[in-house]
Length: 122
Image (tube, rainbow, N blue to C red):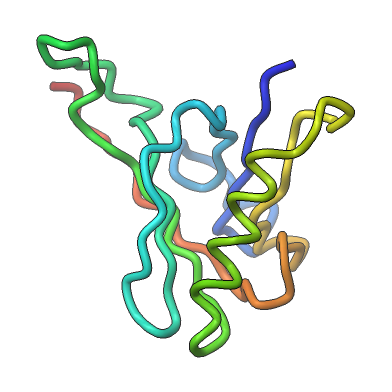
């Protein structure tokens, strides 16, 4: 079974009206997790809209989910993300990492999400 991470950065249900408001990303498309500051961890994934690839067949553009986190909890949040990626075979397939509408997060140290999606097709 394929596994997916779900991110939503819109607090109001009516605002979920474009491709950058919420996204379900296949775990296989995640290409990096980076601590950007003491209060932010970014999850980079192959662009969901931009299908251009390089000569090796790799996506050339990455989308990003910027997670606002509790001060200095970068390692804990990164570890939780990796553990969720490696969940066992009896996993339901979808992991909510951040849902700003429902205030539901993978761990309590994630407090918000901001999505940046590639909009131009190369």
